[in-house]
Image (cartoon, rainbow, N blue to C red; front, side, top):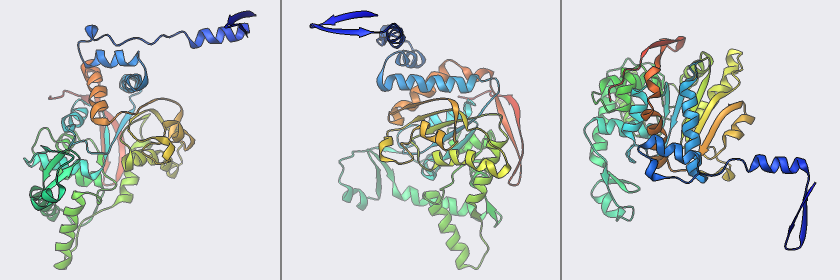
Length: 372
């Protein structure tokens, strides 16, 4: 027993307490030294040795590295929500697909619609969050915080979607099948949907109706209804069935949650639904999330990965991390860090062999061979 004295107060710590104290005080925080940083990867590594949310960004990047280097080849599921296209992350999301560092995507309809909007040649514009919104309405300009889009061009895109749906056989489609066909229609090499279709990467949007793609499909539905014709429809239960099969047929699964929302819950529920196939996957082996939502409000977007373990969605032994940093800041850092160290070079794409809504197998395909 050692005794310390401070301001006349004697403090006694047992040997076991001394040992435990030494363990807890064994890893010092390292100052970020920008004179030694020459790229995103080095910056994120330096963040990982610092503290607060910078360290969490570094930890998320480390989890991502573990996903990519796992020899068992986990299926990496990316869930994206929020104004990511308006925020300038379209190419980042596209590159995650092109460089083979995600294997399947679950997205809000809004992200995919704005991807299509840009694939059609239209742009997002720098705006002002304090703008006169009444004036913007009169000018048919829509505001997304500090970003503007052209409402008239949205109308054109809605009609494009409606006309595209007219070409399809009038039957039920999963969002995956519909978005694959829509992606094949687009020619923009920087498009998320085009790139996913090119590489046969499944893209799901389980709340597709709650977006401007849904508006375009409603326009199509109305046309068909008024003319007494049969119509195609998005079958969201088929979405459940298809994504659950991906989880069930994967040796391991890894999850990336950007912002949260429906995509986050959908990726997690696919683990829960595995019981339909009499399988307990044990939960996602790896997971990280980038969010600004706090857990104490009780909402899903801010819920912790630890909480998800109680539902069986995240493995008890999962490698996981969360950074509470707005995704337009944090996602380019995390993705840039793994791209710069070129972990994609030794990866091969997964091949999903579908027969209608049945996933026959998941196989290891050819090398990534990205085109930047």
